[in-house]
Length: 145
Image (cartoon, rainbow, N blue to C red; front, side, top):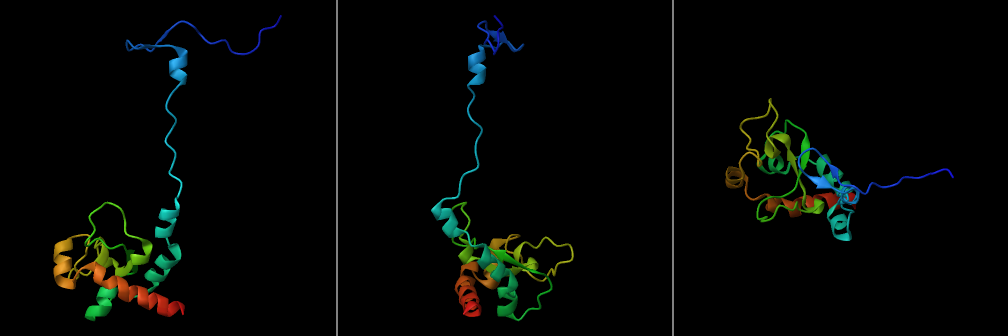
């Protein structure tokens, strides 16, 4: 009679570090962590089309203060008045030029303050970023109509 298949070992196996485990213990590992599936709540917070419309607009700070925008527009999710690590919904995003947003460009305009370089000084100069949400939403809805 021909033997087929795998016969499990019954003797303990050593790993060389003093730990001894049976083959069954080695096979029963915790499953790998899967990426979380999007929920209805997270899908309601995500709106890629709105972010595209935000990036097409002019920087709201440059526009309000009559400054010349010299860098591309980025979508900024508000950070003022937020007390958690969870990002604000995409519908609250506002257009900021690179100089007013991250301020990471080597050729940036040094007269402009970047919110991610110093939130307190940015708020003192331009006001909280939450003040720009409603005008941005109205402008984008006005474009869509």
